[in-house]
Amino acid sequence: MSLRAILALDDVILPCRDLAAARAFYRDILGFCLKEDTSQWVGFDLGGRRLVLRPRGAWLAWNDGPLPQGSAAVQLAFRVARDDVDRAYEELCARQVDIVEAPLDQAFGHRTCFFRDSEGNVLEIYAEI
Image 1: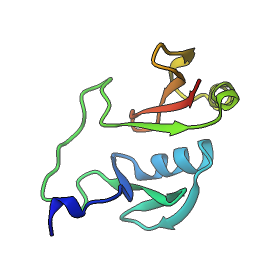
Image 2 (image 1 turned 180 degrees about the horizontal axis):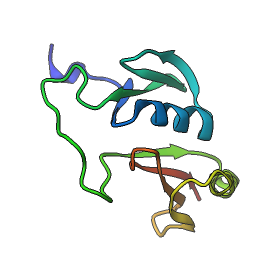
Image 3 (image 1 turned 180 degrees about the vertical axis):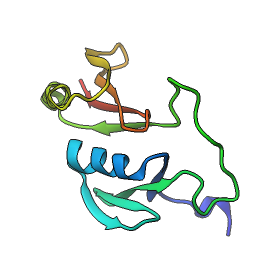
Image 4 (image 1 turned 135 degrees about the horizontal axis):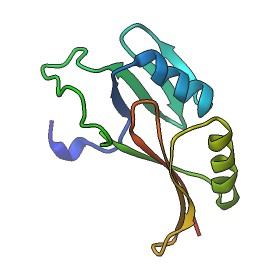
């Protein structure tokens, strides 16, 4: 196989310290559609792609250990319609999600809102403006 055979990103896999809390965050807070739920991973369907949560260190030849406090392992960005950025922010606040930055029009042409998931990863909801 050549590396040029890679044509798409199919799965995003997030290692988790607390799989149950991460499952609850993505299912109950963000409302993602749960497709697989095992003791080794949890899979959500996201429009033809899959977000997979797995216990940190499971099945891997490496285990990076915990991240330093206040750092993020990954940033995920979810595109929505312009008005939905502010609506999502209001919902996140009502659900007491850790907001990093309230909705803001950025110079690069996006309206963004940044927040953290249960693992401390930075998530972004954005719209092109």
